[in-house]
Length: 389
Image (cartoon, rainbow, N blue to C red; front, top):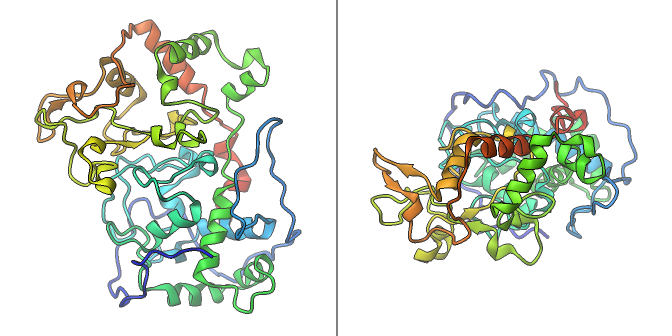
């Protein structure tokens, strides 16, 4: 059974009607909920479509995969019924064309509240050992889904206190009545919040990307990478980038046994020379209370990194070029403003981050390598796309 956090109990319904946020147009319910084709497929079957040598993600025992559950989860992922104002979906902050990030500095919730952090891309997130920028104990899609759906600091989907209304809305859709009944056969009342969460999690486990040029190169296609990208890959390894961006997904967050190393303070801030990060963005320190965890955020995957701009946990770095410059100098320099300080001198900065020379040619090669992590088939894969369109 899913263990629901104590902050989920039903509270008074939100009564206000909120304006559509700029990113709320991307997930949409059909105009006529019943005017959709009936789903026809094998309800129990599920086959991972993975390259040779790639293992399937770990799946919780109480949420086995099935075609019906994945299709149900895909529709829920893109459905604006799962928001307080009916204009916002999971896909509003996780857009396929941006590798399921959202191309915003900071994500915006259904009520217009700005999230303090940048949306993380979902490429191969099924292999990650923790979810979110600084939530080491949130170790499954099922647990993580509760935060955007029911959390109120900040409000994202705004569903806290609206559980009954959500269930009622879904019960009114013929296709949902069919899919829930098939995906959760044997349950007398399958349309319930717990199964909504499980279905979305099942779909998210299929958001997989294994066809970038780097993947084809690793599978033996020497022509998949340009000469510049090959040089960039050598630089990526020799400059120590793999100390943090390791493994098949270029993050320690997917490497078993190295979870403690999957968080780092990269010297993005050093306010007033004190080592401090901006309020609401102090990383693991907000969880542990330890000063040594100031600014420690999860090391993101670099898969499709050219599409998941802007960069940093708060989207404050606008380009890969700028991010490389920050790493090369050993931390970001902010000369003016309320967050002024030299991140290179942050006393809590991770020891793995050391300054290195980055002449223009080397930078160009590194950028060519990072571009080679883009999987164009992934961002156009129709099985991951909005089914309501």
